[in-house]
Length: 366
Image 1: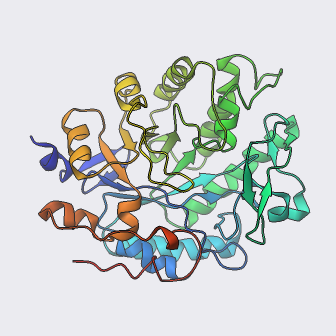
Image 2 (image 1 turned 135 degrees about the vertical axis):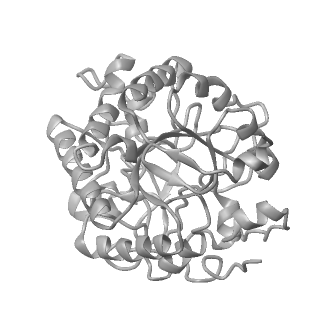
């Protein structure tokens, strides 16, 4: 079977049925309204893209302290949950499947975004290099985060439970645990950001502990076959790195094999688009080639794919589904366009973050 034929065959990711192998990647758009509630336009935005096999929502903070950018939505209040339920219902009405990406940014934040909670938290009190947006949409140097104590980890797990319960109440088909891109769970994985000496630091086994606890905690709400995990081996976004990424992520895959997850979702490091450009690093390792064989379940690959590349990775058996980000921003009917080899709408990067319908719900379908 050709890659194109495979792309349009159904697949089950755990208990989640997909009508095709195209996945809409999680895309931060920074358009939430007061109360960190999804924008009313998001109902239209997601429903327009329901022909994807699976939609993964924009990263959605599990608590006020989990927020890292202005105008990102949460999933910890009743009002947020009600808004997400309208979105999920609209996607389901068009025959789509949708999971919520659960997010805590850790140190990649600024205290102005959560004044009542103080400084960002992280595994260790190490500031990220560079600058980030505060609540006023102005750039500030990263602050030194507060190293998390045991009580902070206990609270974090409670926050994941509440977020998962709200995702279930909203009717999501499952959840994706965001453990990539230099955010909190990724900070625990990497030795550059995790210099703890307790049971959550030091050895790879210890650095994987929190991810395992989060999975097991979320699994008290959703069965594991409705839980996905996103990882970014070799990623450098948000000042993240590890001294031995192959050993780290081989151990992570080994751990994830034991959970019967819906899927593992890995980001190819060749794409450095997270945070603002279209650069492709042709010399970067290909994580699907390194790690796919080690993972015994379903595998989603993301990162700078075009149609031909996606078809190839499916045909080669290096992924069970392929996630597209920027192409889904500008092509709500990307699946239909791929099917008939139609031209694609170009995206307008200036409208990626913030704003209203322009660059959000106004891209034309075929």
